[in-house]
Image 1 (cartoon, rainbow, N blue to C red):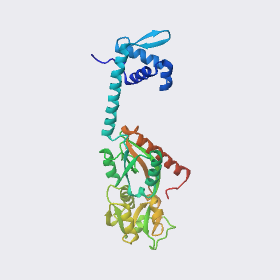
Image 2 (tube, rainbow, N blue to C red):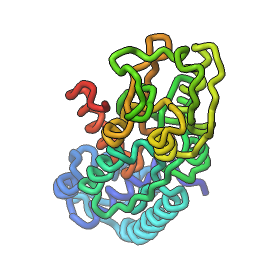
Image 3 (cartoon, rainbow, N blue to C red):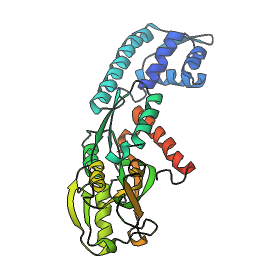
Image 4 (spheres, rainbow, N blue to C red):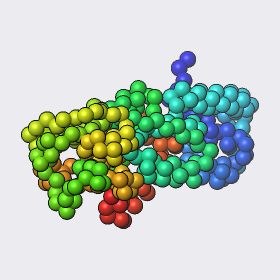
Length: 312
């Protein structure tokens, strides 16, 4: 026979609690619900089973033998379903003791350490795996289920909002970077057309800063001479330090390189911002580990609201 729609796991849990506590008032108190809700659950469960489970003695419900038989099987069914749900969540990588986070290299200087420290306070038992890469690589890994959440630069149309959630953290300006000893006037805005004869180093395709690099020089109307393309921002800035070429870099790198690299603010036509966000799958939004990461991300984002220009 088909199981009646009135028989639910929630009602079985209420039924088991009632069989343990012995009356409706204590059951309601233990479950944090009303006595009316307990009575309704027991009554509709009895209707769904289609046989009497209790008899009334005064104002009390007294279980029949049928209730004890149902209790035995209810315990087995609920325990089996709990194990099934747990194994299902494990197969999906949800709610486990490990969180796989992907990030841009540049965010490992301050943003990622602060988020990890906050997460360890919230969930000290949680282990976090960190993967660094380009915007596109991290997005691909997230979509393939290899990562649980990523910290990247997001732009309109780059991520599928129907399947992905994005929590904005902060915005960052892009600057022209040159060696500290380079004879440039940092008090003036940098017009990229004035640097048409200079050599540049760049991040490889797929990195957020690479996209901005391409767009800026498209506006400037010339193709820059790129000496080399690298796969992380630290290598790129090491080449700038060594005088190999100029580069475009986000302001969040300034604190580390302020003594060896000078930053020039770009002239208005080339000015751009990166929106840094935590991105994760929408169908994982109730994962306890991701909820903790989102809560920590909101606190981090609030620090930028409270402190203007905190990223520079």
